[in-house]
Image (tube, rainbow, N blue to C red; front, side, top):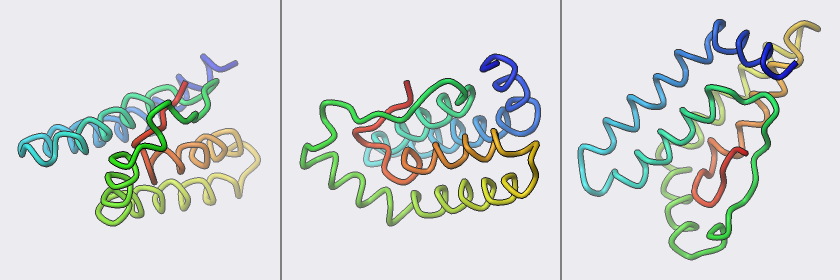
Length: 122
């Protein structure tokens, strides 16, 4: 069932959303300061390719001071907008019964989009 969900996800927007994350990450990597943020954006883009059957977990470096500082910067610059898009998309999809599994995936991606340093989708 997860394979079918991922295929439908890719056909109806997941592929283009992933491309947006990946190209945005590559653009961020043009400066040295943006490299860690670009890596996280690409990580979200790859995770967005197949969210069904996966969950967001904290990594061993989630509590490090540098991860916390980078998450604060990410939230202020990018994270709140990305999380808001996932929230709105999830609410719109949750209105219909057919869209509930896809809404669940958007809601699952919100913590990763809000604070990606120290988190991953496995």
